[in-house]
Amino acid sequence: MKRILFFIVILGVLTVMATTLFNNNGNTALARSPLSLESDQKNPVNVTKGGALEQARIMWDFFFNKPNDTRPAGKIPLQTLTRQQLLAAPNNTVYRLGHSTVLLKLNDAFWITDPMFSDRASPVQFAGPQRFHQPPISIDDLPPIKAVIISHDHYDHLDQDSIIKLAVKTEYFLTPLGVGDIIVGWGVPSSKVKQLDWWQETEVGGLHLVATPARHFSGRGLFNKNRTQWASWVFRANDQRVFFSGDSGYFDGFKKIGAKYGPFDLTLLETGAYNENWPEVHMHPEESIQAHIDLKGKNLLPIHNGTFDLSMHSWSDPFDRIVTLGSVQRIPVLTPVIGDPVSMQSTTSGQMWWKAALLGRK
Image (cartoon, rainbow, N blue to C red):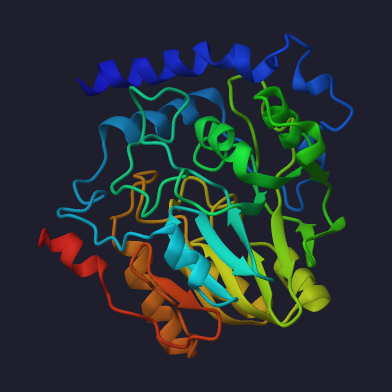
């Protein structure tokens, strides 16, 4: 059965290539867009590229040789949210909605990162990594969104169905170069889309936003790797500074970002889906802690974990390791239950909720 699903997913990738290479109006491929680029030339550190056989081996292990503990044994705790609760919340409140989707209330407006509300992080919804918990609030119930901030075009960060549903209630979409072309092709009005290169800045709703470097890659099909840019993001409100990593391997860019825009009140740093086979593009927890230090961060909220099975490590490993490391370094590591409000000034790590899910307790 697993082998059948493996080939279904590969087939799914092939079937969506038409929508990857062409937009809804049948225009030419993203590579021809004036805002697209061969981002390999811009990666701050060379990313190791294994050959086809090595990539096939890694994919085979991912599908057929996974350990048994990469999934939670029990139900993941969830704090459901309502629009009324969000509207009544004070400024500088953060809600983790799952994976890398974070809702922030800043300057009396709402901002959301890498919105992923679909059931599967996949080009098709009948196969691929399935989420372990539902979002704590639906897109329909969200209040108006000032801006959606996207880090890159991978399926677990750029979800077509979520973007289309959000378009009617979102004022702006901020993306790295080329990613905006994709969502315009999906029907998002171009007047709502702002595409930024690394170190470019913009003002939206009194919030200062900067697209900053990251060490990663892009692509939504077999033949369009690195045709769009990827980025991390800096948020600067009047009294608060937030860093959102998107996906990134560890590199010296964090020190440069920290020197130019830090210190940060809160860092949203990926801590999950890491593996020895791809150390250049995802940080291990020790590297996430070092990135936080480089950024001159105060509070750390680990993201990119808990929602999807995207690696070979145990499901609880990102939480256990980052909390232990934070304790040693005296860094406040915020671990809210999905949907729980967190103040950016909080120094309370929260309950170790993943322990119950790991043991299978309801």
